[in-house]
Image 1 (spheres, rainbow, N blue to C red):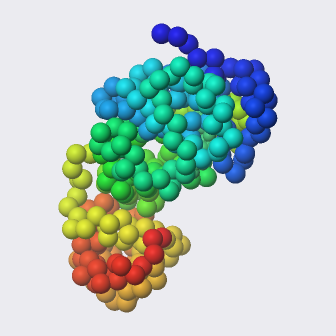
Image 2: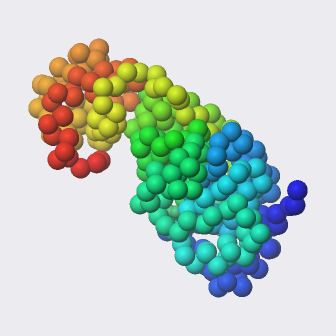
Length: 298
Ligand code: SAM
């Protein structure tokens, strides 16, 4: 097994300078330089148990390279076209890697999985650009893609939020989706000095093992996710106020649904358990269903 030199800061700087590349803060470009991190992520992401891996944001290819050692195939989605010639050089000879130009938030991931992995199942492994951590994870979880697991490096605080169970103080709409779809596990922490350039915060790697069946019964999953987002949309308000304002439903109806779900009418969203959120969405379904087509995603 050959070894990559892509986590060597001197080598990275030399390659990037030769290509005239400058880091973009806006695109969350902090590249890994700790040689221990990528092999560990690749080993623990469950690549062998599926048809391949989707990586979001390969950067210079340090994690991609390690994934290509353990996966049948790797599709690496990169938005920054300045990195394409760099990746052609750093991943030369890695024949099971395909670079997919584009924005992970806009690509048709179902189609990608059908085309490149025969319909899957696949796993996701990424050092995520931090500016879109929650939207990416929400997208991966809500679209019902054929995934076995999602292994991601995120900011340490975001990792804590994502792993918080519904009913816990730090919980948000993303944690609801995480617990509904998966069993989250914090794998390890990564200090800020492990990146070039170093970010202002430490990071953590977590793996979400996708469930075969959700732990609660939901009549309409799209609606459930929408209700959960609406409950958390205005965190300073009670869940009833936030739901009523965001979904455009009369407050008494929301309060009735909360009562049917066994929750107090002045409850805040972070105190709602997964069971209560499911019951709430089911109770509101009749009301909201007629509006579903007209409301924007929060
Ligand atoms: N995987 C590399 C590593 O660990 O060193 C780079 C990780 S860096 C934190 C995030 C990467 O995501 C960058 O390469 C950045 O250009 C890319 N990126 C940012 N926004 C993206 C988007 N919307 N879709 C796809 N890639 C994106």
